Length: 376
Image (cartoon, rainbow, N blue to C red; front, side, top):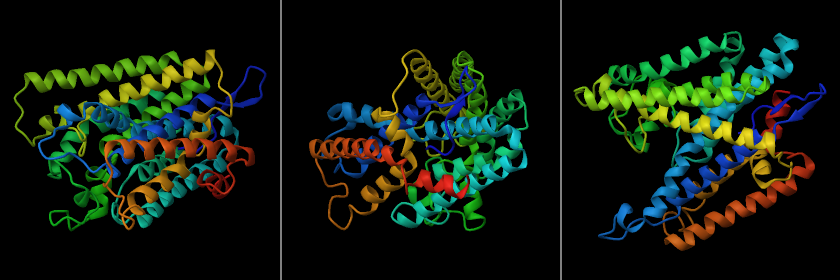
């Protein structure tokens, strides 16, 4: 989501928008929509069918969407870091802007919860809540050196298994549990527990993506893109070590070590090993697109760029439209594969066309526009 201006200094000292970051948000928008609509529109398996045997292509296509929210969180960290780089001389005013934007994005998260009662509740902790939380803490985090931020991110990863085990988080989380409505959901400190470890994208382990994004934003501003690829390799090694430990060590199911090293898909709750591998992939994708954009500059009217500029609006709109509004008209999980894919790609095409036209008026009255008005 485009929560902060993706700008940096050009060699002439002027500011230019980093369209590669917008394109990355656009890619995340597509992945987000294809994953959600693939689940929300398709009627599912017929008796006797399996995903791997009968719908392998759909399974792979849908699995790619799992990278959307992690990419958004990382890009939010990069955007926050670039805002710091752009406005560092303003001091306290910068911190106030960052805090306001964090609160506003959290507010958008609760707005989405209100608009989508079939999925969320007041206890929900979704990707917008996590992004806003990170922005809210950025006034303090921006004062830390990059090594400290990366160390903090690693600590978040390594502590996740222990936090999950200490709170006795179920090995598999249902949607009803993650919104505090299941009979086994915690009855005390419900919202806090969900935010910390039991939501869709809780602080442990997903805040590590925002912290990595803060550091990568510094490297983008300094035109040191190669360091992002190096970080991707380092995080990948952490994930590989987790896999190795999981294979070699005897870890009882449900214990901290087992929760740290096991791979579970869907990732609710997510293990640090899976998260590390996913973060490595996200960072590698960010490096690749930014390097591509440096060599072959994108245009502002590129469909991925315009989709990325409207990403926050599209997130809220598509969730309400296809998760909530499809139910009373009988379309919710009612379509065969072909019609579902037709609706999916039709909506993406319509969103790309609308965002291309919307660009001409500066995305006026969209969620991104409102965010800039609330926290200029």
